[in-house]
Amino acid sequence: MKNKIALLVLMILGVSATSFALDTDLFRPVGDNNGTFRLDGSRTLRPLDISLGTFISYSHNPLVMSGFAVAPEKRSIVERQFTLNFLGDIGVHDRVSLGFAVPVMASKHVDLATVTTYNNYWSVGDIEFHGKVRILKAEDFPVGLSVVPFAQVQTGKPEHFTGDQSFDFGAKAVVDWEYGRFYLTSNIGYKGHYKQDTVEVVGTNAILRVDDEFTYGVGGRFDIIKDRLQFVTDIAGSTVIKDFFEYERSSPLEFLGGVRAFFKDQLIGLHLGGGTGLTDGYGSPRYRVFGGVTVKFGIPRGGERKGAAVVGKNREIEQVIVLRDVFFDTASSELKSESFAVLDDNVTMLKKNQDVSVRIEGHCDSRGSEGFNQKLSEKRADSVMKYFVSKGISKDRLSAIGMGETKPLEPNDSISNMDKNRRIELHLIRYLNSAR
Image (cartoon, rainbow, N blue to C red; front, side):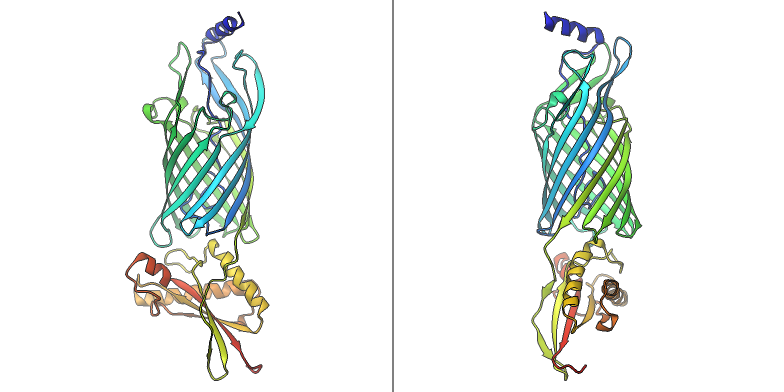
């Protein structure tokens, strides 16, 4: 008898007896800070570098259905959701990183047994595992390119809108571009659902289909204060492939914007933002606010050291450190933030060895004219020297020189060899006698 009454209520309200079973919070923040809030960048973490983070998000009305036979014609199925995301990424290779995301979710939504009252529920959402394989480096090409495969395990509760009905999987291509303080990224991909579901509203054309999806997004950021404060924005959405943009309910699209601040030489990041859904698609809320913190850890990298030699009449000992993790924008002498960790390791070393002087050499590959490469190498060496001075190393201990393309380590006949030839070298000099 109770089941017949519940079915009668459903029919009166115009909703089919098909259960709603899907994850209505599509916000999955990116934790490595290489892209935007939820769109990946092509860069991977350095080997054994680790990034951990947590984000809290509130979304209002992430699922609203219209076309009911009785007033009100439009009803909120999920009124609100809180999600606490725990994130982790680790670099396992120069071009490969791995990561995970664990959402803990609380939602207030319609009681599906009555469709007239709201209940509150919480659960762990679908856990995601992902990787990133870097194909093109933005330092070597006009754009960066990576592939990001992922899989989501059903650990959420579909009936409480905190997970899909089954195992999800897919991959996306990441193409990004950097120029000075500007950064742009685009993500295009496929998300497969092992099981499909369709929710229909009786007597209307409203259809909500959960099936294999085409995903997409574009975003960017601007350094308000170089490597300290960023304005970040992105637009991301998806649509069911079988009904390609035919039904708005199955084609969510959301805009986000906010700021990202860094401290401790970018080891700590604070994130704050909000946004709104641009369609009535599931998971496209009326508004969203979020905040988060990320922390990076890494092993010290002093650079590749070459053997010591005794040179000169004053019997000075010279040791060469080849820095391969010092990065600049293409044809630019401005240090990128990814360089700070390895430079800071050498600052620490120089502070512990006050009797050491340093000659900083800049080296380029063979792309560009000899004159251009010579000037560029001089400017890059000078940028490193200025960074050391800003960190408290006396300028009297430092000198900078550009070598252009005159001293390659390998023939400039391949991308990998040019990668090796484009470098900064630190020539450490320690005098054996006290008189200098």
